[in-house]
Image (cartoon, rainbow, N blue to C red; front, side):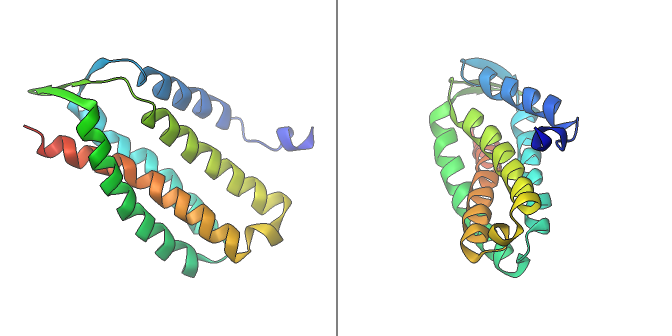
Length: 154
C-alpha cells in the first residue's frame, strides 16, 4: 500500500481527464480545429520523463528518431480519421488511437517514475532507457503528425 500513498494527488484527476478525452474520441464527432492543434501539448509530458532518465545522452536521440516516425504514422492515421473540414470545425470518425496515445503516454510516464523510485538499477539500464524513450517518442509524435495532416487538409 505504500506505493499508492506515494502517488501525488494530481495524478488521479489527470488520469480521469485523459481517460475521458480518449473515450470521447472513440465516437464520431465534430470538434474545433484548435483542439487537434492543442493535442501535441500532451506529448510534452514525455519531456519530463526523458529529462529524468539516468542516461539522457541515449534517451534523447532514441526519442527523437521515434518522434519523427510517430509524426509519419500520425499523419497517415489522421487521413483515415478526418471525414471533413468545414472552416474551423472538423468531422472526425471514432477511433481508438487517441485513447491508446494518451493512456500510453500517461502509463509510460507513471511507470518510468515508479521504476526510478523502486528499481533505479532497472531504470538506468540501457534496455529500459531505449524502450521507454522509443515508446515515449513514438507516441508523442502521433499528435503533431495528426495536427500537420489537419493543417494541410482542405
